[in-house]
Amino acid sequence: MDSFRLTDSRSLVDCAMGRVPADLLIRNGRWVCVQSGEIIPGTQIAVLGQRIAAVGPDLHQCVGPNTRILDAAGRYLVPGLLDAHMHVESGMLTVAEFAHAVIPHGTTGMFIDPHEIANVLGLPGVKLMLDEAALQPVHIFVQVPSCVPSAPGLETSGAVIGPEEVREALNWPGVIGLGEMMNYPGVAFCDADVHEKLAATRQAGKVIGGHYPAPDLNSEFAGYVAGGAMDDHEGTRLEDAVARVRQGMRAMLRFGSAWHDVAEQVRAVTELKLDPRNFILCTDDCHSATLIGEGHMDRAVRHAISQGLPPLTAIQMATINTAEHFGVAREMGQIAPMRYADILIVTDLVNFRPDVVIARGVTVAEHGRLLAETPGLSYPDWALRSVHLARELTAADFRLPATDGRQMANVIGVIENQAPTRHLHVEVRGNLGEIRPDMARDLAKVALVERHTGSGTVQVGLVRGFGFSEPCGLATTVAHDSHQMIVIGTDEADMARAANRLALTGGGQVVVRRGEVIGEVNLPIAGLISNEPAELVARKAESVLAGFRACGCKLNNPNMQMSLLGLVVIPELRISDKGLVDVRRFTVVDVLE
Image: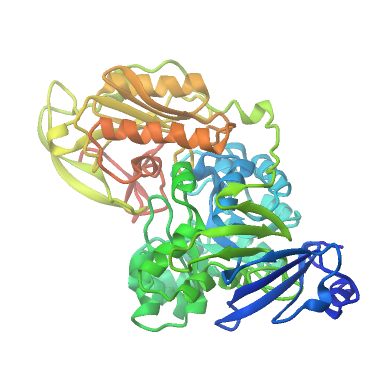
């Protein structure tokens, strides 16, 4: 009886009227009614097929001899949680394994932007994820990646998605809109391709995802908003959230593994009393170990409540606000007739952890245990062979030539738990014709190794903030957004060993200390995703984090910080295959001034 857009409502009417028995009746629950802002005790919910037929205090007319009765025993009945903006690839998991990890935490809907795999495999990679999303027992919508490459002329990605490809993909079933428009200068200064993609999305009547990371909230921000972006998750300050909402955008407050941007921005609601219905919770990037050990959107809800939000308001930000933003509130995001029966049974709204997860009328998880299947695809060979180095690398490839004596260097400064970096100006000393790492001053090397075409390009710079105290080399093929290979470290030979290891294994993340591999996760699908179960990937990813710690790094989720060193669309300083990029000016600068 079900399709995404329900066309025949007669069966639901028959059930509500008592002419057809419900498949499931939930009774004795406290209805978290996000659409009215109430919690209503003594509520019953009648479910027929995948949909809700009726909600009320007494639905005895819906009960038949084969109706399954589920007693909520006074617990809360909450709509399934929706993640408004996220990248499956950041979990290092396939779509199926990501769903496997998050369903027990109460996530029943996700709006994913697969621009990571798109930068490696192009539109065919997006289609792989879309096809796998359609197999899952929860709702997974896809946004067409808008910026492949993210910064044309400043980096080389493995693929290009232009306006024609965007127009094609917007017509695919399951595509909800355009992914985050990261090329904010292209919007503000009227790049033709950028505005053609925006126009195609408006013509399709779909949502334009935003991405404005700059602190300037004056003319450039005004120009970006005028381009039509409908949301933004890049804010980190109170004033960022306020400005976005006042300009008609939804402020997406992200709480992922490494990006903790809720606390400051939620003050717009808790202190300034702005209307909370224009604020949305999302995760953006979640590490597999976070998903398995701490949770997903339930974790974001708990955190938002800890920052002073009333539980009902926090839940609205993870349910109905998201559904209304994407135009699917007639289908999900609230417990009401005709909506999908995506229902959580929760004992404590503050310590928010679902006891029971129902998705499309089926109990898919109970007490943290997944009960449903999450079918996966068999990925083709072309998706598994994406790391191409020109040759085996040596320590000499990671030299930073310099004249002897003191000089100033442009250095990338890592900011813990935030995506932006600082553009540091640091005095360094050349010795024997090169600059070496300096652990005493927290100066490590960072290199970008071109891995899509095998050109042999290696760009070398300096980074501060990892706090390494051991000779080491760490490498990743997860390197937003071009996903070239990023290598950091304090020993050039170990850096070469780490890079060569990833070329051998087909991609992933690896930690080498004093010549020995001490942490590793293999990611053969596009160099971004594992084909192994979520729990195993989480353990391997944890070995990488343990490796960072063994090298002296004390950052929270430093592997994510490493993976963003090549993200040339977020200020202030990054590295690409073209060199060191000043993101404020969108120009390449010398490492040594």
